[in-house]
Image (tube, rainbow, N blue to C red; front, side, top):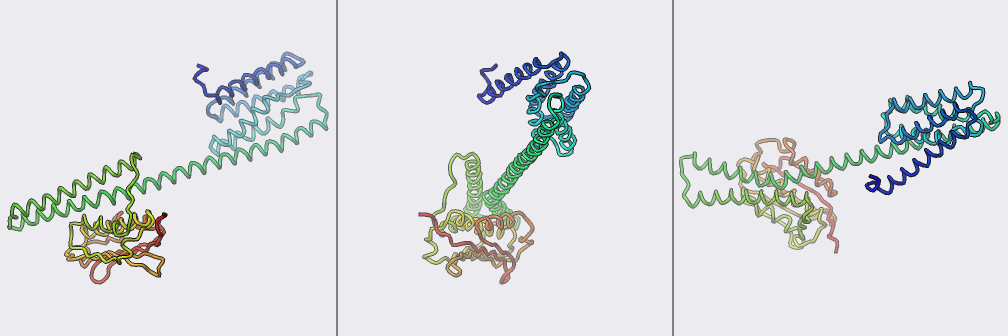
Length: 379
């Protein structure tokens, strides 16, 4: 059993055994059997409660009451303690004070800590050989020392709470990142499947049966979009499992060309300066550019009824900022500025990259504009 313990657990076990032996030795030095037994019982109880894996308020409060009761008994008996008042017990009670502050709820620790404080400060009065001057000095040291213990416990509790809060914030940020990736990588291709399926149904229900070649092209488009959705799902799973790093798009032109090339809606005209198209930008900026174009094209499939064309433009502003604009000439069928999670997640992603995003009606259609830092890629 001992062989399964870690070195830290073994060290604590050895220290606990040594402390128990010291408690027994303290009890043997007492003048009477009653005070010796009381000293041993109080010391071993303090060690036992301290060894508990979790602090329980009723148990700790009961220990403090027993300690105070024995202190009062030592003063009532004709022969109390003459050379010790319980060194191990006082250390254990101080340690339990800090643990109570850290582990118990504030409402319970407020009730338990004063009892422990009083028990520790009253311990020196068990020893009748201490003069009034020495007793006052020892009590003053314990008063100040216990205040330091309480402050230490409060600091450790605050540190633990901050670590917990930081963990929760990290989990929340991770959940938001997963939600954005799921929407951006998968919903885009699912939207393409829905749009092409609607086109097939519209063609069939209009009374004009498509030719086998046209029907095959439509079904091939649906198959392609489904394959892309599966590939995106596999990519997300690979990232979550850390099987392989996410691909890095080397240039701005590549970041724009990928979603444009997979778009199944109206024709897309792309306007990027030659120098800007081959610019190597930081990965987080390229990632934001890619998602701005992809989410904008997805929203066009969903909401821009009657759109006949889409324009994607990329240009520099003041030589320090990059502006990406995606505009269509269709009539929006819903309020895409706040009706779903796409633009919300996109705004968060652009903000994380140090940019801003605006979206709204423009020139009879809908326009999404992102302004991002023109941060070059590291060599």
